[in-house]
Image (cartoon, rainbow, N blue to C red; front, side, top):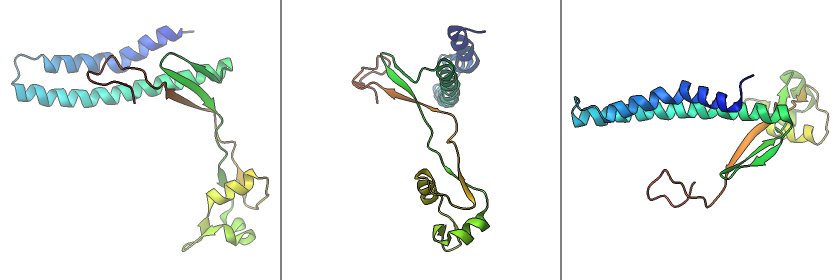
Length: 162
């Protein structure tokens, strides 16, 4: 089994390392004109942002799985808090026809369709509505919240993180 540190390094190398190196190469390319360096820097930064987002999503999935596997529902670092929150059960329409017959008041007009928000509220209260059921809400979702009033050393002029 791969340790979390090994996973972080492997995932970083997969998503970020080459994208960042391409950006550095673009801005330091002495053979290209300044305009070309600027254009290439923009292109590489936009690609880098996409790579960072993919890496962050992979890290998020890994942290979510680690927390579920260990049973930890919340913890705090010096920068953020991670909490597994139970997903809200949503309404699943099994038979729109059966629902429309039994509860026409729960159909949205002009074209009648189920009012899933209202149906979910009623189902969560315990009401039985033909043609519907309540989902389990899916797996727990991971919420990461920044700790306020921490300075960001990577941004010049920025006093606090967002």
